[in-house]
Amino acid sequence: MGTRPSGLTIHENLRHHVAARPDKIAVVYEDRTFTFRQLYEDACRIAGGLGECGIRPGDHVGIYLRNHWSYIPIYYALSMTGAVAVPINYMLRSKQLGTLMGLTNCKFLFAEMDQHDEVACLDPQQFQEIPVCYVDEGPTGEGLRLSEWLVPGRPAMAPDLHVSIHDPMMILFSSGTTGLPKGILLSHLNRVLYFFELGMEYGLRYREVNLCATPLYHNAAIFFALNNLYFGSTTVVHRKFNEAQTFADIQRYGVTNAFLVPTQLHRLIQNPERSTFDLSSLRTVVSGAAPLATSTKEAIFECFPGVELHELYGLTETGLITNLRPADQMRKVRCAGQAFINMEFKVVDPDGRELPIGAVGEIVTRGATLFDGYYGNEEATRTAWRDGWFHTGDLGKVDEEGFLYIVDRLKDMILSGGVNVYPKDTEDIIYSMPEVQDAAVIGVPHKKWGEAVHAVVVCREGATLTVAEVTDLCRERLAPFQVPAAVEFRSELPRNPSGKLLKRVLRAEFWDDQDVKV
Image 1 (cartoon, helix red, strand yellow):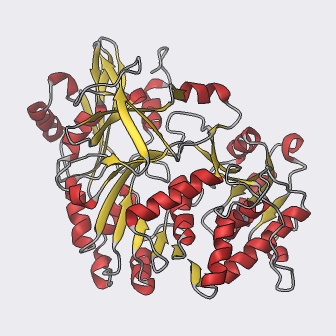
Image 2 (cartoon, rainbow, N blue to C red):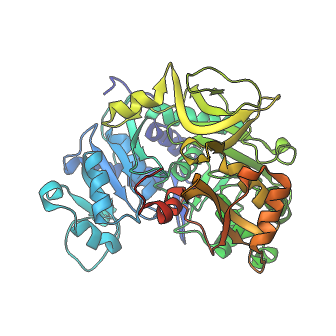
């Protein structure tokens, strides 16, 4: 632990806002509002409760919650105590929950009553001594209750601890798009530098109102929520995403900025109710996880006139690597943008040599906001870091203006008849069809070629396509080896809560019974 307060940690920043704007609304959740003073006092009381339970600086605390008002003060409380936040996907069952808690050596758990059965099924030999605090009320008498820590008469005083900006703040898990998630260790310094960079990029001020409608266990959601609070602005937290509630709260609270993944944006622009609300306050929309089609962008600008659209590319390990800024949205099609503030990237061959303009290779990056390593996994950390650069596992290319284009995940590349096939090339053509809402191209087993190109397509509501229409367009615009050998239509594709496509789930349907895997 450090020897003096840094003045940059999120709880020190919160104390500043209590002094500067104590009665300003900090958090809105459903019909409840919390001022900066109330947020600080709740965080202090939670920190006190954690201390009474024996939680000490450096201990890991699991947060197994849906979006809930308590998520925010819990983060601040953990910062005050020097404990490390471990947010966990609330949809995981007890076995997966136990795996992640064991992986990160959690010594305490926050949960909700409707998850009691999952918590109760945790391995008693491993987790029997771990205290569980439920943030809501319920019929069972087991566990601690957050409400008992937040009684009005309880002292609201922050622990007298010195937390260094170099201390760990949280462990987030990789998206799990390629298998078992890894614990990504992030320091207070990492998060705060991230806040400043985003504040500079978007011109954040204390008068902003931020909408948080994505799960708070995920990096992007908690980052944008805490980032706006760091600048003294208001964050409106939704329990879950709902189009009507999103429109209503933009109008009711004058929401100025929102992080929305592509699937959420698709639902908003297709909802006819949008025309009955005043959405003019929305100034900035930030999206990520997947590129937006040109037709989708046009619909976004129609739905939210005058909005500035930013598309981000980055990983939990790296923070933001690139940003496609508003001025470039329509002239750079399916582009990831230029380097973000204080970040560098390049495209390299398998030996680490930088490739020329237009050549496809692996994207590597370095900068101030990169993570401190994979918790308890030095081998994975060494593999990811080579010669001072973090290897993303993504394939990309750079144009003459320094704009980055994501070609594919390195592991998603299809090897068909000895030829490398980049699924994104085929997906881009399919996405150009106005009837298409979502698409994925994967490699499936083929006796002759090893892998065959297989397309899975989701049509927009009310639209229809035939296999021939898809393959004919691909033959017209692509090389023969890039044309899907088969096309199937589905109602949806598997995505994680951040909107990332889970191609491994699609591939598993075809490969799980094969002797040879990819």
